[in-house]
Length: 513
Image (cartoon, rainbow, N blue to C red):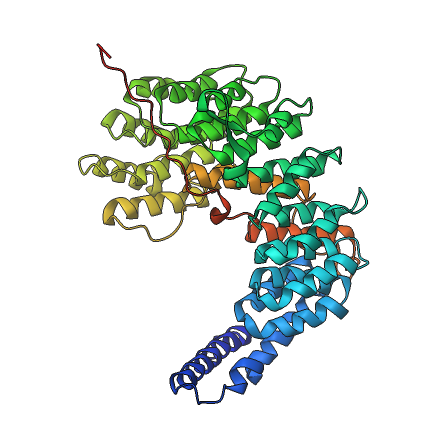
């Protein structure tokens, strides 16, 4: 025990205390209705837990910003007993304490916090504290809060709370919340307000998807108006809403924007949405974007990302011959090649273990780990062993880790650890996810954009020893928000419209049909 840090020891004691009290509460409830309620379990934490709470609360007013993150995470881990002191900070704390209290309460989601958060959203004088409070209210999904959130939407035109309130309303999933989103989308409000309301409409399939001519499903008039706008950001928001809707009748719409050369962001959303369709024409479209000299790098990367989930023997030779100049695209295609488990393709992956780019080498190791053919595994294991022994030159530390993990998987069939992706984080995050989850990731990036945190870099340390930044400066506010959104993405899988409509290839017509 001497080697255990004090903080870790306290956490162990707190866990034991919580479990003991939970067991006591269960025992009391098991005695029957005549037993008095346990006053300790429901009202007061034990001394060890109380100390942990106090220490974590102090971190919310510290610098650097990483202390805020640590404090929030420790409070979330404790849960129930932190709500009352957090509500006290929300009411009487410093700027830093108030904004971090709001974010923490929006993670714990104890319903005692709803009314205090709404009051803070309406009355707090600070620039961002009320915005954070308005944003987290939606996480509780309380329909009773919609009227007060709508009042925030109607505030003066340049109030940051208004964007947060629109996002919060979108989480409520009611008829009234959709009516509010549609009203803002069709209004003459600030463009960023209209963009936010527009992409949020995609979470309401029953209202945002309507039957058009011939009974074919199409986006509602509000989304069609946004698609026809001259403002690219508004078009992208509408297309992202259509990507969330995900109906097979929208395929032609996606194809139209996949060829929209005026703006690559629209192409990327369309290529993402088309990932639901396993049809050959979509696969060919992805390949054409990869081989086109005029395709921007990020369009090629999206096409490569979506190709990873496809296996079409008709295009295998073309994939083998394709050698992109961009290392990120080449790495993505390296993973796509691992879908084809034949000797020639495996040898292609082995060659890429020696590529000049660490990103490609790391991807080749990940690709080889996916082999299931017992006749090809020894070939891959020998190649990885040669690389690790230094026969093919030096190996970067992260690449070495991937190669060692890949070799273990090939030998044992079990994965113990996570691969390290070198380079583009967007692609790395998308590796284990299906199309629905990738669309949701894109939406959450839009959430970060409209809230103004996309371009911020995490504040790792103070600028110089002994120098303190003002705790209430705008950069600190938004960095706290950025960190929270990265840890707890605002929209979650259950926000996607249900029931999901399965997308299947069009039936092949037989002769004589």
